[in-house]
Length: 209
Image 1 (cartoon, rainbow, N blue to C red):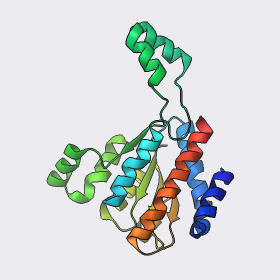
Image 2: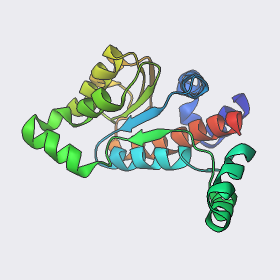
Image 3: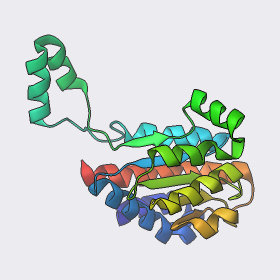
Image 4: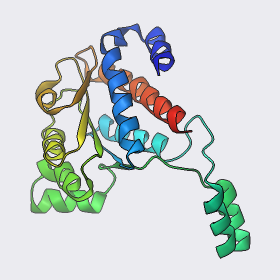
């Protein structure tokens, strides 16, 4: 874990002030998955794309092979010899994660019927269980729908990891772990969010696989 952080801060020395928070977030993710829980992720605009990106790194192999267990391989081949053998050779173990930005019909229904500020909070109500972890991404820290999702997550017993800019905004007060990237420009903050969450995914994948 420390080696991964050292690699990150050597490439991006401006992230040294948030090194401890990055390690705490990695530990939070590992604890979540060790208990059999899942990760939810949300954000707007560029942070919406980051949400999908994070889920893509968690739900399949990122840098390591993740072969499925032999007992599952055997069951697949028993059910269907040809396709089961193919599935057994291709499927990978996953770290369960859901991007709350990806459900367009649900998002538009909530926005139309209840309010656009509730699009992520309503999904936390449906998907979130005690012990899960929410990664809430907003460069300003003030995106109302992201802050509302974090408030709802805290109420339901989820751990909240915030990825923000320097101030942390309103999100700072409801986060268990805040990674507030140094900088005030949205573009510059987002440029640093990516190597941070890549490092988190690398650490978690290394731990379990």
